[in-house]
Length: 312
Length: 276
Image (cartoon, rainbow over all chains, first blue to last red; front, side):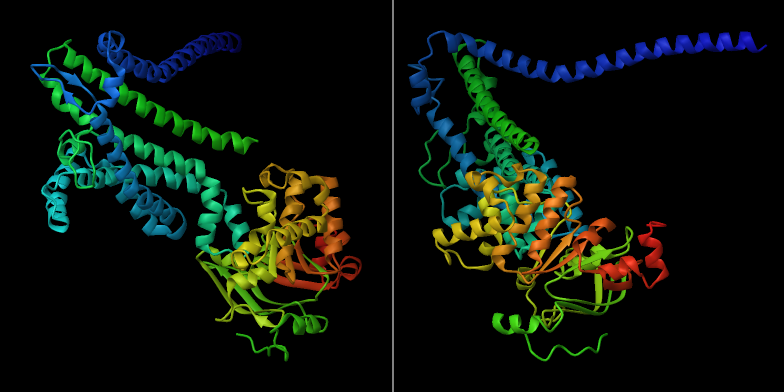
């Protein structure tokens, strides 16, 4: 009895082991494909956007005019003009205003959550801030249009409430959650032994923050800010609703502006596929893609900087 | 909790303190108990630590020796759930008094940690970190600061090794150098007491030997309390030895007495390695 059973059992085990090896391989490949697909999709998006823009980019686009002319008149019957300077300045100034508001608030909140509060408060704050990130951008647009705009008119006496300031504040609120969560991670990653070292030398909590934690976490905090900037540049719907959407190089916070993203969003539907206007919008897409790509890459390299320094 | 009268001469200035330290104890605890939440980590601890000596705290893991050490600069209060009763008098002042500034306390009671923890800034700035905290901006000119750094690093025998790279990051040093730096950065503050929590546990045998020699030399200037797991180390470096068990002081005597003629049975069993 003993011998056949073992041999059958051994055979079953053998087959099982073989199939196990196969399954192992299959799972490994599935996971590998998931990983590579991310790269594939990014390349595919870039390829698609670039393909549509290519005829214009490669075929006689006057780059100087494109980047330095503030005249965006794609639908002109006489002579269409494709100058994105005003749009570019609009987007960048929007990001600038948004960051001027979001960075102090975001980093302040990150410091508070990670260093100055504990237990329940900390958990509650983190949840609320994550909720803030979950608010759809169209809802932020409503907030800008119907809450912020009347307030801005009332307080500043501006003609219209939808302008650089309005959009800047709304986009700031949208970037704060990113800055807070990444900033808090960066602060949390600072070893506790640094805090104890500074504390035992007589440093106050605030001193620990700016003399120990900021230098120790500077890369992570910078990455947090850069990702916030990326968010501000890339945001579309709320920006479209709150900027005033008028082509204009802003001279004050209360000037309406127009952003690159919002331009694509509003005009793409009115173009004929493949015509010059269509190509121009895709060229803007390439510009946007390049900006956010560079920002994210910088953020990544900056974060990598922490790791290589730690291992050194 | 305690009825002990403070020493007659209050430690008001450096000169009176210097005069009285020879006579008074550097650290006195009276009926010191400490709880982490519901768990009592120290039970009615009453000890006197004599000045300009090395006192070692020994005992098995979890006996409260590190907790006791961390009472002396009140750094264990950073965990919110700590309750302390009793009195700790350092250089003639109860450190739990209302008017005690934690920053000032930590200036005169320095601490060296188990794992070397230089701050992630340059060697130079590490040495001056404490001074920057305790004095106003530009109290010292550049030459004075340079001199402070040099003398602190010389005192820990690190100057020769690092003098050419004072601006490089302290976290790049070897563990032994890091630990010496952690001692050096206390010195510009002119502390009276230095607390050391297993300062050699991260070092190899040679590093341990050199740091122990250094600790031995610091004894002339500072009162040193050292927590150690290593009985041989306690025997080598300390003048007095305190044996703790389950949050209580079992025996406190000169190191040679404690190791050669322990009075308590528990001490004897511990030093013979029968438990712990």
